[in-house]
Structures are given as structure tokens and as C-alpha cells.
Length: 265
Image 1 (tube, rainbow, N blue to C red):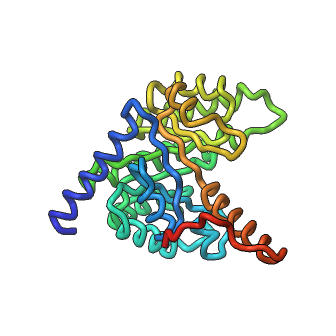
Image 2 (cartoon, helix red, strand yellow):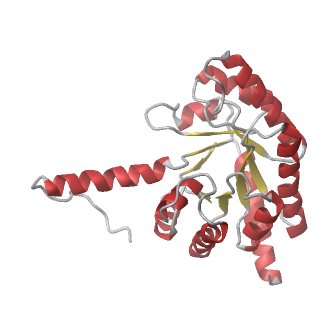
């Protein structure tokens, strides 16, 4: 990497980190290929991009959950990075067996942030993985923005008291914050009271959540609760696919493509 490229990478990383601590919540509409990245990047108000591993896997015909070969996954992310001027964060899933090496290769591709699932591994193992990713950022000389994810709520036993899942999410999230992760992602949080509880436990601008169609609070409401970031995961791709299927159905029923369709590519 040239000195110019290294300087630009460090600048993008610092910009991305600052977006998480700004008073305004960071909104990331997840992308999955070059054209989706370009469309979102060109949307007024977009300040950074995040890829969705589920969506990239689906694009190539793989199921979610590290079924897509990492090299193929990374190549798509590399193409996205090259196509835009904004900071890009990559979903590492659970780290592909070596979170530190996965982060190093992503950083070499121009990535300045990443999601890492704990998959409810023993906490010591999960913390070690977080430390490895943060070390990769330091070795590259950048303020890498790890969005350390805990699945404590997502994978909680539905028969157990809800408070147990929330307490475990807080325990794990605090452990990740203590070893340097700037923010913690807790999928499965949708109720106002739970989001407030976890946000307060982590501290200002430390919690990130996902927006679920028809269920989640609005971006404005999440900002008022102290959430640092809201992303969309695979749901933006599903929005696009829903529009595609609806358009196809209209044509097959004897109709026409929707008026107002814009030439975005």
C-alpha cells in the first residue's frame, strides 16, 4: 500500500469513527454489490456504507452463515470499496475461523470497519476475537471501527425470562467495549424499553441496532434513545427484491412497469 493510500485509509477510518460519536445517529442502508453501493452512496445524506453478508451470499446463490467462500465475499467488498468515495464497513460474519486475519485482509482491500458475530461462543473466545480485530486495525495504523455483535438476544431461549437475554447482552457488550470495540451491535432489540436499558448500560453512542420493516422504531426515536447507529442488514436487498417481484407480477398480469421508475444505473 502506498503512503497516499495508507493516508486515505486512515482518513476514512477516522471519519467513520467520528460518525459513531456524533450527536446525530449514523444511518447505514446496507449494500451488496457495486450498483447498490453506488445508488446508496448517491443518496443525499449518506455518509458511509456497510455491506450485508447475507445479501452478498444470496447474490452468489449461497445461504447465509459463512457458506460463501471468503475470497468471493471479499472480492465483492473490494469492488464496492473501489466504486465509492465513502468509508465502507464489511460484515465479517463470525470471522471465517480467524477474525484477525479476516480483518487484516479486509483492511488491505480498503475496509475501515466491520461487524463480527460472537455466535454465542464462550465469552473468553469472543473477547479474544474482538481483540484480534482491533489489533489488526492498530497494525494497519487506522482507527478500525469494529461493530462487535452479540447474539444474546437473537438466540435467546424463548421460554426463558427476557431479562436474562438482556442481561447477557449487556455482559457481553461491556466485555467487548472494554477491549476496545467502539460500538456493540445487538440484533433482536426492538422494544423501546429494552433499547433504552441496553443503551444506558453501554453508555452514550455505544449501541447499534438493526431496522426491521414494520417492527422497529423510527430513526428519530432511536436517536433520542442514545443509539449510535442503525443499519438494515438484508432488508434493503429484500426491499429491492420485493419491488422486482411486484413489477414482474404486474407485467405477467397484463399490466406495465411502474411509473416513476428512475434510471439509477
